[in-house]
Length: 186
Length: 186
Image (cartoon, rainbow over all chains, first blue to last red; front, side, top):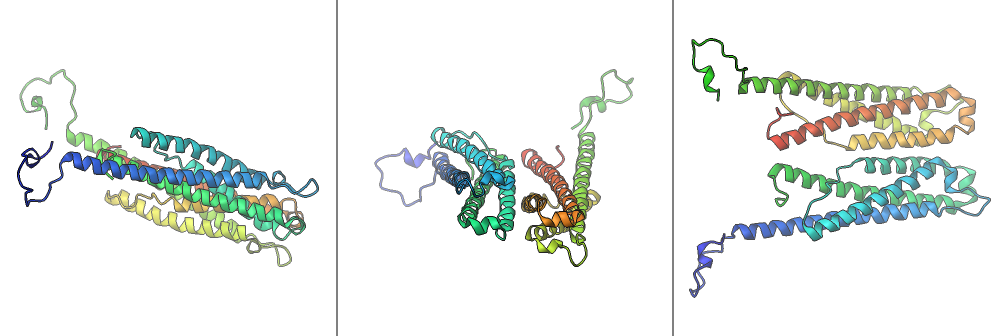
């Protein structure tokens, strides 16, 4: 409901300041929520891009038939699988985010920490293997193989960071929802 | 407020069942909370024991001056450091749990996921290194070195599981607190 001063017309602009009504309040909150959801969408998009890039970099990491391939090392297979799974999950969450933004509905809170754990453990295992390989013949013979593995693992770690950020924001939104009983109060 | 039938006195014991008053309710809830907090204490204790055992197993993993030591491998150093940090953290949280149980106060919600991430990544890195070492001269020469590393890493993973459980229960308690506005409703 608007305050009475907006109803009276034809008067000079009154010196008292505009008192925002509840409609104004909810519009501001809606805008805030929209910005918040857009930020979550950006983080999910970044997580998708980085994990997809990491998976592609690892998948294409083969140097001829004589040298080593990524599938010869279990840790690198793990890196590829984890990044591919997280990329699919992030794509799914991106679609959910777009749906939320277009319809104004809250669908998935994304408090599934399992994907972040999966990606981090894969990248940690990949790092340990990459560090061990550095002093062996594999890296001496084909240096580009090790270099490409490093890039893939770094991309995976960056994907993990963005996944963590988006998970943090989603968790914050859920906490706000629980505390205030409304998703509009951020 | 109690129902009126408790006020009228001198009547024969009525056939209607006893309706529990608010005092009874809060006693049941307090008992529930106590059991819940005890469970959290048990999980924290288990996390402490396993991570401490993992750190000790890794620290004592040296076979004479001629063979390899744990500090020759960065992933094993990481395993030792992560397990030691988590053991100290778990000890701290155990003290907090005992304080909570004795005073009935809620101190630390333990939603710090960083320690779980740290331990998991260290154990994943340790696993990758242990798997790589298995086919090398290090394991062929001193098999017990690799065996003890495996035990340490397995203990670390078990510690991570208990840390995750206790974190989950703590998070659940925080969520209950936020939803019901009281820590007594579980």
